[in-house]
Length: 146
Image 1: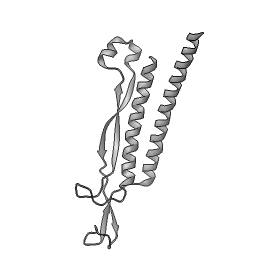
Image 2 (image 1 turned 90 degrees about the vertical axis):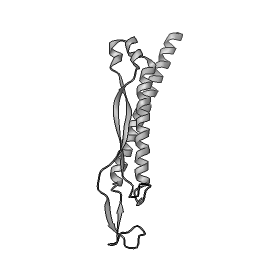
Image 3 (image 1 turned 60 degrees about the vertical axis):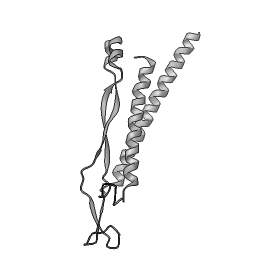
Image 4 (image 1 turned 180 degrees about the horizontal axis):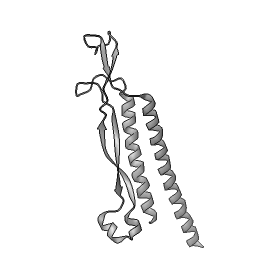
């Protein structure tokens, strides 16, 4: 594995964690959204990841066997959660139905905060990996200078 491969793997992790954090912030922002462009209340979203090779097929042929198994991560997609909506009795709300119930998205703040902390820790771990690779490269340059 060369210096840039470690950086490529970590940058793929940074991109994935950033996408997850964007979706979490979107869920938190829409926690009380009762109307969307589709007509219903906002539907909670989640991100799914997929392991992906770091090297292109050409680069894989050029590297040794150990480097062929290196994988980063990519965002496979953002999917809408299929949880049922919450019904809250608020008869004076403009979106209340005939019985006085308002339909809200089923977003749990504690779950979203937990997911956010997990995304932050993943992001920080990838930053630390990049910094470690950078320090190793600088030490190697210092050895080369004598």
